[in-house]
Length: 144
Image 1 (tube, rainbow, N blue to C red):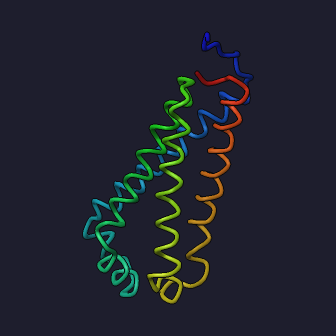
Image 2 (image 1 turned 90 degrees about the horizontal axis):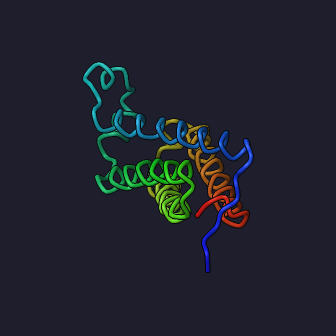
């Protein structure tokens, strides 16, 4: 069976480029978490410092897996490879692990307030929509 692909429409390229830039912002966020300067650390409130200091190391690893798998998925989407789906799935699983930790095992909503969970849910929603788009792209044979 020949693995032929169909030329994708312009919206495909727009979404793929958006996904890449979106993923790069995730990497920048991850790097800022890894390399917090004293200036930034001193601006944090005592409660925010408590959360930062007591966050388990494995959660930072999950965050790294999330953003690097997501960025790699975005790159595979741009070069139209099916592997984008598997990497996107790894990324969204890592996102889910982080959200579950913050919802059920941390007191972040007590410290920062209920609005602290808005951004993680927005990130999950965007990641989920991108994963659906990758799946749709596979069904349309835009990816090989």
